[in-house]
Length: 395
Image (cartoon, rainbow, N blue to C red; front, side, top):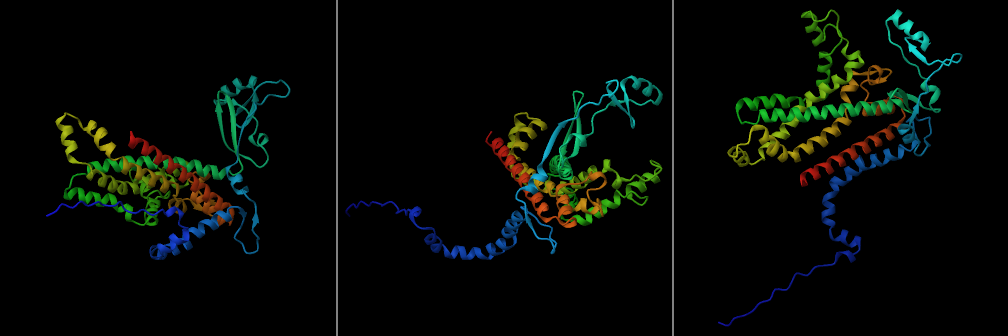
């Protein structure tokens, strides 16, 4: 038998960069045809409303048939985002040039402060000019703060928007941390595969699959300010209070109530995700760590926590997005005929403010601008989380 040598020619590669795009689309027409059942509804119900919302945000559009839309460009965004920082000048007596102090409802010169404090038992504070006399036209005072005995005021053209932003940031910060930490703790406790842990997992996960409106109504009954509210009923029966506590009508309780509801409802969902992440960790790593003499904290900090980074990053991003979109609890518990947000707008967050502007005041253009600012905030925060997560993963 004679030996034969064979040579294999390299595969022929086509240069697709020189092929016109319509030719490539035609060659892949079957694939694009199979995508149409998804692309058509997605374009109609997602892409087109997004584009329309972006266009409407550039108009003074009230959604009333008798009002014609007026193009205002970026005026809606300027009205929302405009801030002004001013220093409040100290007040002095016009005749004696003495420093003025705020004593109760009265303004007294410095020479009369000691007598007032001794007589009334109240401390006086330095008096400053009124914010409305300092701020530019169209701005109202949003917050006042002191730095080194100097008082400053931050004015805004839309103070309610900035109140909703600050409330939302506080809500997101505490609820994300609470759900993250408690969800991980519950997952670690219920990690073992037993009948008891299965039952407890089901109990913790039930709030995640229950209608949020039903849960909010129940929590509203728990915090009801009347004697039949659960907490007030138990407190009255135990003699802890003599009168019902107005939880839902108190600015100090509004944000804690929203946080408690959000954390309670999110622990179970995060627990399931962490349990899935824990099951993907190789048990041999724990065995090796135990042989090397590692304690529980060293095992957790050097094995469990680093290997849960992808799960933690996912939970962090989704929790932030969900926190910025909180709506049902504020709408059900803290809405009134005068607007959303409860007493002194203490529970006003971004989405309820958007709803208030769009569907109560019918300022659709303004509400669309709020929606796009909210999208930009969530988008930037998500990018930061992804960047930090990838940097930690690489490290």
